Amino acid sequence: MNVSLWLVPVITCVSGTSSADAPPIEGQIGLGVRVSSTTDSHYDFVVDDSSSVRLAADGMIGLRFGRVVVGLHAGIATPLRFLSSPQFDSGEIVASTNSTIYPLDLGLGAQLDAGAGVWVSAWLGTTESFTHASSPAAHISAIDFTGDIPAASWSDQSLGLGYGAAVGYDIARNEYGRFAAVIAVESQSIGPIPIRGNSGGTGSNGENLTCRSITLGVAYAY
Image 1 (spheres, rainbow, N blue to C red):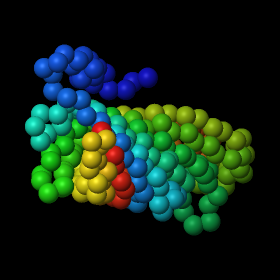
Image 2: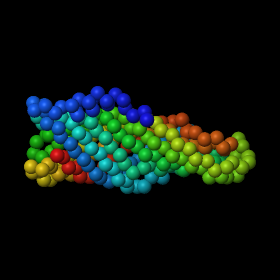
Image 3: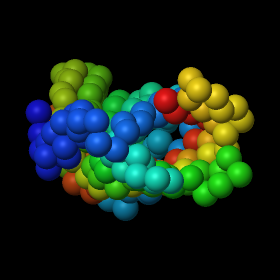
Image 4: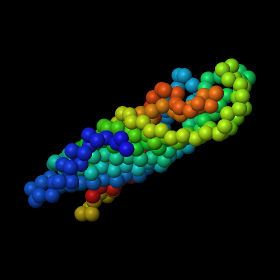
């Protein structure tokens, strides 16, 4: 799987710091609810059919240097869903496609303790999108094709830019870790949306779309 090979040296660095004089390792996991919007397609009929509220989870593991933690960020969320078809004129019967996109974020992250229980973090890396699409059998009556097409399903994946930032406030802190309320904003390149041509061919609309999100949640650092 083509997933961020450039992260391997960083993983090795973090996992290899076990000597007594090495900076301490710190981890954080978070869970929240997310609202998102995607950029519009300019070439095909694409409808964002995702749930209005999605679940999201992320985490970071890294090395602490004073008030700063630097390490690896990863994030997942419940999938995005789309309905798409070729652009059409009034009265045409065209092919339709339902697709589900599962985004996975991987990147480098940093967190700064700003004081008074407030901290800020940011990450930059890639979003790998795993896509599954299906299209029902249909009788097409369009300007470019007329006839029957069978049902079809196919999968794809794409790799694009991802980045985000968050602000947190520690609600509780003790020797076991800290528990915080968090608000985060993110941008993910989710790649092209699957689409089926009127003649039955499968593929995508060729236009990389972007998903932008706001997440409200909680995080536990240890």
